Every structure is written in C-alpha cells, then in structure tokens.
Length: 121
Image 1 (cartoon, rainbow, N blue to C red):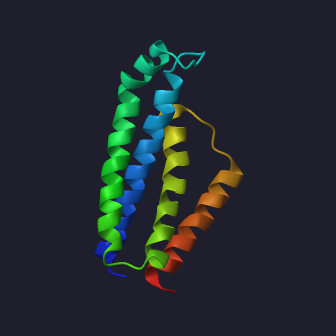
Image 2: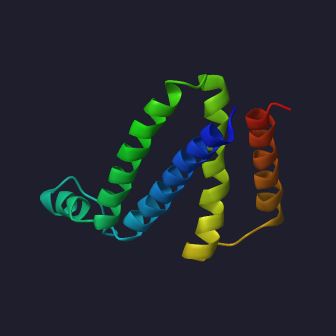
C-alpha cells in the first residue's frame, strides 16, 4: 500500500477520533434527565458539539467510501483502529481522563497491527 493511501486512511481515522471527542463533549452538555419531549429534542438540535460531530462523521464517511474504491476492505479497515489510539490520547489531553499502563500497551499493539497491515510485513 502506498504512503499516500496510508496517509489518506489515517486522516479518515483521525476524523473519526475528532467526532468521538465531539460526541463526548455533546454528551456532557445534555440535561441530566433525558425525556422524550420537546425540551430534550431542542437540547440535542442546539448542541453544537453534537451537530459538529455528525458533520465530521458524515464527511469522514464520504471520504471512507472514496478510499474504498481503490483499496481492498481487508487492507483499509485496520486503519480504523488508529481511532482507537487517537481517541484515548485525545481524551487524556483534552478531557483530563487518566492514562493507564494497559492503555499504553494496548494502543502500542494496535499501532503495531496497523503497521503490519499497512506496510505488508
């Protein structure tokens, strides 16, 4: 797989990670009690974090479909795992979540797996 294709797939995964951070931010801004009523619907529709997350996901999905035109799914899909590395890192840096040894080791294994697939070891 070319470096350009790997970069494209990595960018898509990073966009998914941005969307996840925005979803978490949106969730933290929701009312404590969620009901099936107009007030809850209004809080969802006016939550710019949620709207931004949905837009990011829509764009990432469109780019994903384009990336799959020239890449076998079996080679492209492991790159989605990069989001599994980026989300915890961003959560630690941006949301103040804690970093554990198991998280560090697990994300290292994910990175190794993506490199094995991407570089064809």
